[in-house]
Length: 414
Image (cartoon, rainbow, N blue to C red; front, top):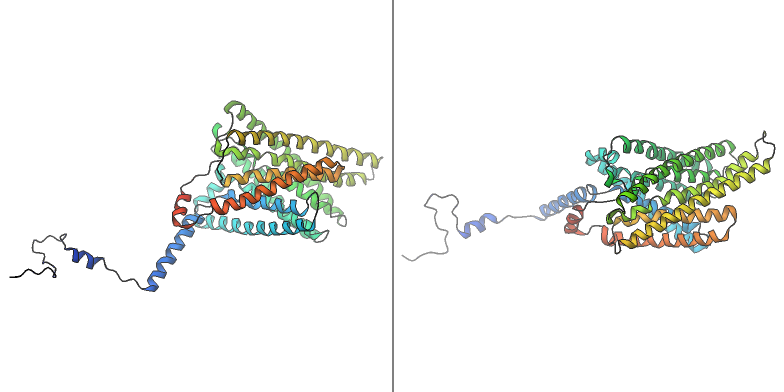
């Protein structure tokens, strides 16, 4: 009898696992319709969005929103003004608004989808400290509204600023208390990024001093804003220097921070730059307020004293800011080269604060050298923001499932 190789052999040994190649091929054939394929791809895309874009989202991107905001303000009010710089400032502000929408949406979605993140966002310093940049980003939005309003929309600016006050107090008081009471921090984890919840108090104070300048027709609002701004400024300076004292103690005992935390050393500069900007703005507001008080005998003397007191405070803060900048730059050189990562964003905003601080000292006290310094620091800030934007798109923003998976495996170390 001729053998037939075309027909499947009958399974006579009773073994259910024994199958011919033809049986396996027949069993593996599955018909997929176009609608099924579309459904599978949609499901995969949905999982990629939630598991990688949302689950792996980190609040450090609030710094990008904040940094593009101060960059927009620097461009719009550059020490050497030009119309084309104002246009670039508006473009950068548009980018900042887009980032504001993105970081707000992604944070809300992550809080909704992953409940464990709700606790981490408040108690884990790896996440909680980056709520500070969100508040500071709101300050940059308020500043730009002030510039564009040009003396109008005063009550609206006042409302925006009070929202900022609430955010700043939440960060500067509540989150700092959580750091004291709940967060697990050992000596190795004590680094300069822990000052980020304190900085919103300084930035909000500077924003309030700026907004108050246009409230001449609303004297009660102007005085309220100026006094609250000064209280916030004083609170932030005292609290911030307490943190800096701890950081310098850590440097003496444990030496430089690890390479991954190099750029966090720039963070305290924000306290100095914004503090100088805020108190320089206050020199105008407070001297006018106390200079018009009826029970003071010599109004002109009061104005002069307050004016120059603010001047000396501005110089003190800027000088220490320059020192920290030198230490931070030396740390970067010590660890050179440092591959690009989202941690690069940490150095952009502090350098921008030195620009606005120096520029305001020039406007308030008429020292041309500070105008030049403001332009130099402003240019450096703008260039760094552009580098970080391009680098984030090329390096940090995930492309495709393979890179998404690799990106998800990385841990942020600041």
